[in-house]
Image (cartoon, rainbow, N blue to C red; front, side, top):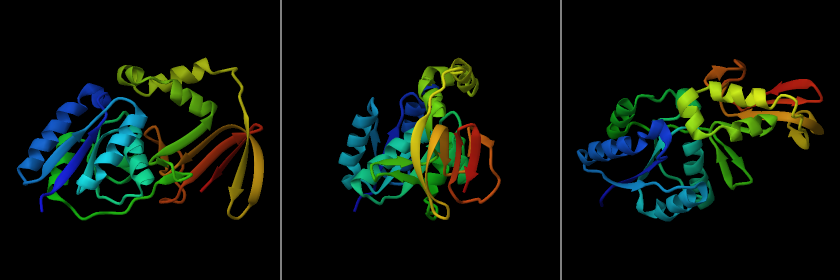
Length: 231
């Protein structure tokens, strides 16, 4: 039976170099007698649909890009209720997921590791209503607005400074939402939330913000001028 790996990539990841890396990965896998199918399309809904349509033909799925590209691919798997081995070639701005699981951030090294077909390891992600996967972080409120306004071209040109620029522009734009939180040991509370950050790692934007409870989700929120951090 032939083995086929799907290679899903974001055409804008790695300053537009993801397509080149995708072809390099395909060539390397061919030397190991593994067939490949390149998967890329503009727009998140179309990308999710493409992956879901192709999954029955695949033995594994390789994802080239950053945490956002991983979110798209994992959302497709979640919606399809599919279980398939995943390989990651990080080419994002920060690559929180890859750093969390000690994956090579150099594309050539990542391709070599995938070709070696190492033992699989389980990883933890978030699932929102069984419709959306989150491999690194989920934000809403002002922080989410800032992140959503940062364009891919800005990240490529200015890196992390692009987020600072957008944050400065948001000064004075106070927005809050009444959000109901259900805590395992503290009951349910509705809090007027200025921003909330949920992460699957102890770092965000490449910076460690909580050294406690490794391997667990972290929730940080600002409500009514009081900050809360839970694990």
